[in-house]
Length: 134
Image 1: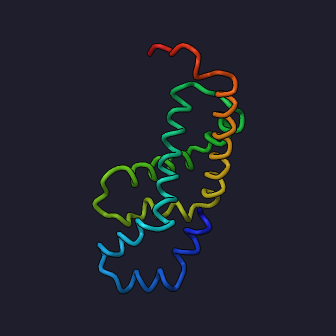
Image 2: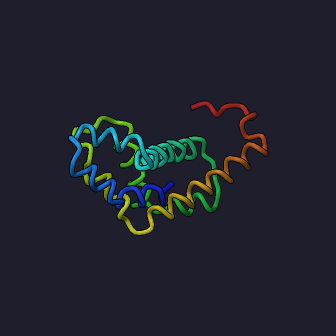
């Protein structure tokens, strides 16, 4: 998915649309392609992280990845950017995520680690345990 985003964002066709389309039409174009899907993925991943913490799950690889507080904060910014109204749609706070060194690889690793962790918990019957009252 990230490769599609990167290819789309630097393509001559994308640049032509950015230059020639009205801002609202260009925004609609962005929401219909790979770029928008990447941000939804990142925003949803922050929600998964929130559940992981709230359920007090533990996994060495996930915990190690979540120890990178800079990347965790970037993921939350992405969630806020995609799921909350933004007056300035192309805010640098959200675009810079794609430029942060190692962020995309970290997201891929975190996604895979969450997948393995959640599958393991389901296989062990975690979801059949009584709820932990708060």
